[in-house]
Amino acid sequence: MFHEFIFYCRELESFLFRNQIQEFIEGEHDSFFAEEMLRYIQAESLKIPDSEKQKYPNLPWDKIDNLWQKDLARAYDYIDLKMLYYICAYEIPKITKTIRLEIR
Image 1 (tube, rainbow, N blue to C red):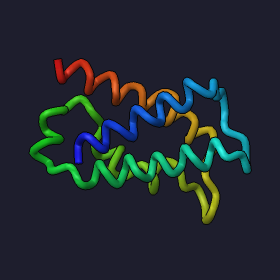
Image 2: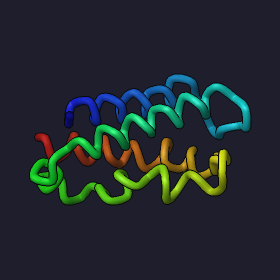
Image 3: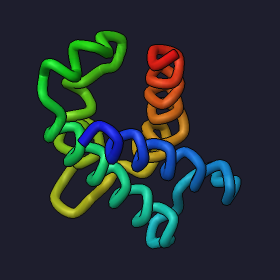
Image 4: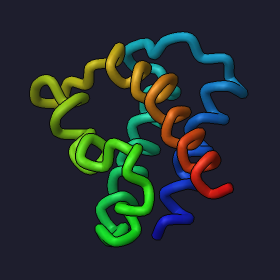
């Protein structure tokens, strides 16, 4: 569970870095891939028991667990691409960095 969560976070982070993505454009495959990765991240986060989540109190678990509904979906079949990019480019790297630092 937790390993899959970390895996998807790292994959999404490296995808943006590897492809040097600076923004998401409507209809581009990059944004679809990022959406799917965030769905996987959220799904894996929901599987992690609270006892494990308590080991990482600096992570915004509530935000991760409700990411899709609260931050991205602005209207039926509409995804806020600026918010999608912000989460992928800034929030996900914070998560992976926090996990790396706390595992040490």
